[in-house]
Length: 217
Length: 251
Image 1 (cartoon, one colour):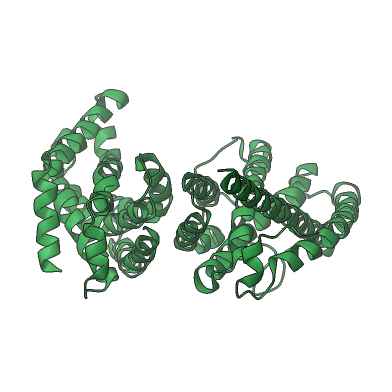
Image 2: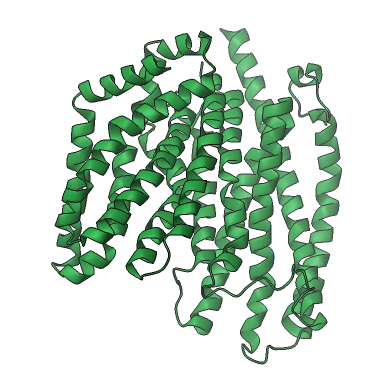
C-alpha cells in the first residue's frame, strides 16, 4: 500500500508536472475573481475564503479523470485487483496519493492566493485549517466519481457532474467554519461537521469506488 | 404477453420479468383510472373546497401541487436506492429496470417542485429564487438525477451500466437526509415541516385533507408512470435482444 502510494505520488508529479499545473490553475482562478468582482479589497476579503474553496474544488477535479483510467488502460488495475491487498485499501491509498499530489500543493499555495484576495492572517489560518480538514473528503468523493467513470472515454465532464453535488456539504461546512470565525462565533461546530463529513466519506468512498472498479472489465 | 428475454426465465429471480409484464399490463389501466379519480377529487378539494390562508390568500393553494411534487421527487430517489440495492445484492434484472425508469420521473417532479416553488416564492418572498437551504438542496437533487441519467446512458453495456449507476445512486443517498432536514437545520426562508411532526400536523383539517388526497393522487400518478415506463423498457430490451439475434443469425 505504501509502495502504491509512493508510486502514485511520484507518477502524478512526473507526468507533466501535474501538481504544478494544478497550482497555477488554482492561482489563476483566484486571480481572475478580482477582475470579475472589481478591485474592492473589503469585498474580496469577505468572500475570499469562499473563492478559495471554489478554486480548490475546480482544481481538484482536474486530474481526477486519470486517477484510475491510466491504471485501467495498462492493466495495472487488474494486477491490483488480483493482489492480496483488499481493493478498498488500494482505493484509499490512491485517494491519499491524489490528495498528496493534487491538494497538498494547493494548500501550500493558499497563503499566496490569500494575499491576492487581501485575506487577513487570522482568517487565512482558519481557511487553511478548513481546507486541510475538508480536502480529503473532496479527494475521496472524487475517487468515487473517477471509479464510476473509469471505462468511459472523455469522462471528465461526467465525473464533474457526479462529484460536484456530493461535494456541496463539504463546501458548506468548510466555508461555514471561516464565516463563523469572521463573525466571531465559535468555529468548533462547523469544524466538527467538516471532520464528520470527511470521516463519513473516508468510510463510504473507498467501498463505493472499489465496488465500481470491480465492475470495470 | 411475453416481453421478456429468453435468459430472464432462467435467472434466479424473486419476480419473473414475464409475470411482471403481465401484472403491469393489467395494473397500469387500473392505476391510471385511480390516479385520474384521486386527482379530480384532490384538485376539487384543493382549488375550490379548501379555505384561503389568512396570510397568503389563494396562493396557498400552490402548496397542494408543490408539496406532493416535493414528496414524490424524494420518494422516487428512495425507490431508486432500494432498486439499486436489488441490482447490487440480488442482481435482479427488474431492479435495474425500476431504477432506470424512476430517474426521469424523479427529475420531472423535481422540476415541478422547483417551478411551483418559484411561482409561490415570487408573491410571498418577492423573488423567484432565493439561496435558501431547501431550494438549493432540491436543485442539487435535480442535478443528481441528471447526473445519474447521463451516467446510465454513457455506458453501452446494460448490465454494467446498471451496476455502476446503482453504486452512484446509493452514494447520492447521502444528500437525501440533508434535503429532508435542511429546513430544520438551517433556519432560512423556507417554512418548516408542517405535516410530519412529533406534535402532529400544524395545519387545520380543512387544508390537511386536500393535501393528503393530493399526496395520494401523486403517489398513484408516480406508480402509473413508473410501471408504464418499466413496461416500455422491458419491451425495448426484448426488441434489442431480438435485433441482436437477427443480426447474429444473418451474419
